[in-house]
Amino acid sequence: MNSNETTLKQTENMHRIFNIQREAQIKDPYPSLALRIDRIDRMIDMIVRNEASIIDAVMADFESRSPFTTRFTDIVPTLDNLKYVRKNLKKWMKPEKRNSKFPLGLIGAKSKVEHVPIGVVGNISPWNFPIALALSPIGEIFGAGNRCLLKPSELSQHSSDVMAEMIGASFDESELAVILGGPELSAEFSKLKFNHILFTGSTSVARLVAQAAAPNLIPLTLELGGKNPVIISETADLKLAAEKLIWSKTVNGGQICLSPDTVYIPEKSVEGFVTACKDSLKKLHPNVKQDPEYTHAISQRHADRINDIATDAKEKGARVIPLSDEVGEGRKILPSLILNPGPECRVTQEETFGPLLTVVSYSQLQNVVNEINEKPKPLGLYYFGKNQEEIDKLTYETSSGGMVVNDLFAHSNQEDLPFGGVGDSGMGSYHGYDGFKNFSHAKAFYTQSNLDPFKMLRPPYSIKVMDSFKKQVKR
Ligand code: NAD
Image 1 (cartoon, protein in one colour):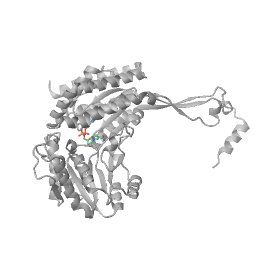
Image 2 (cartoon, rainbow, N blue to C red):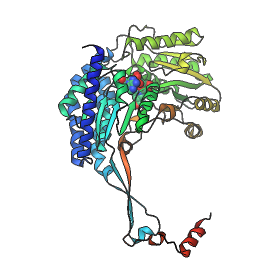
Image 3 (spheres, rainbow, N blue to C red):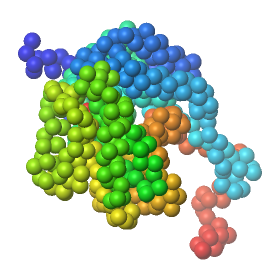
Image 4 (cartoon, protein in one colour):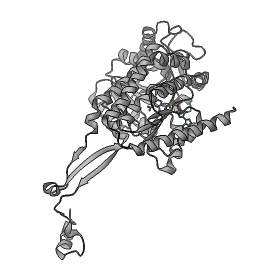
């Protein structure tokens, strides 16, 4: 079979399963709590039973990614999220009582919000955390009573194949199914008449998804990337900040949507910070080149891109400081700092998505705020220090999906906090209750009082009623 025939067959299969899910949703539009929990339980059981295959598949995708990293970043966070939904679902599914306008409530009218399923959700996921970003949101998608078609990344093909196999063995196609394929099939996938699409990936592809979804007015949750700023205050513990930053740039090889991108640091602290970063790398990865805990780039093309970005900065006059004396090779990219690159450098313009950290010195926090506000809104903003005025300034005068003080990524592990971007870094959010609501329709539900209180508002209108409305036009 040639590649056209394969795509045609995959597309036919995708339409077949989509129709099965739509019909199933019509037959059972409001799955019981027990059935939703059963689906989440099956997902948990599936992941636990297939742990070894997942670890092997992710290792094959990244060439080198340790079992610990896969447990730490993919398996355990997914299980935590699924268990959190399972524990709280009964409470979330309860109707939300709301007030009825005075005096209707007093005479028996009732208002509430019913969170009802939205239907069939399309879930397009990326390669960098191939398991967690594909499976974790399904906890909330199932919790909200929906069905799901998952389209994982073709760049993490081994992980995608393992998910297709284990999901096929644990779920009926009418509940959850995996559609495998590349960008061509993905483009067809996002044209399907889903009730909602969750897309996790790059901002450029998100634009294509939004265009494909527009004719059918499909609501979207877009979880995207960008360039996340870090502000180091004069009040920060520089050593601790450097250690956390170097950890965050080396875990998963820096291939993280929430990865810090540009560090703004007081001018006088720059040299101390460079030394602290070198020391941190030595402490975290004493033998970085041989360290099996150090994750490789997902492909040689991705590794070349990161190296090219560093070379481009060097050629345009920025100071590029490798943090290790060793030299990376192949898909292993060792971390470097890039000091004060100009606006024409690629590292200033593109999301790095690798172990390069830009360092920009500042003298006035206001200038940093201005610079952040001139750029696309980031997914995460980080602050190291203890100056409350500075924290308030960044909280209320900049816009980012989330913000963390004295740590990195940490908000994304709090299941009770919404996770999502704003502007170019995304729209909508999920995790926990916010995810349940995101994948539900909040149906306004009102029961009128038996006393027929609005009888007088039906024609013919009395002079009294007309006068009463005239009088209500006031401040
Ligand atoms: P990508 O946008 O290239 O691909 C993501 C998914 O979209 C893949 O499954 C791919 O097959 C699919 N796709 C490709 N072309 C498509 C099309 N025309 N229509 C529909 N789908 C299409 O992203 P990537 O390289 O896999 O992941 C890296 C990007 O994802 C980075 O920008 C990163 O910041 C972002 N990301 C964001 C989050 C988050 O939660 N906000 C998490 C991880 C990664």
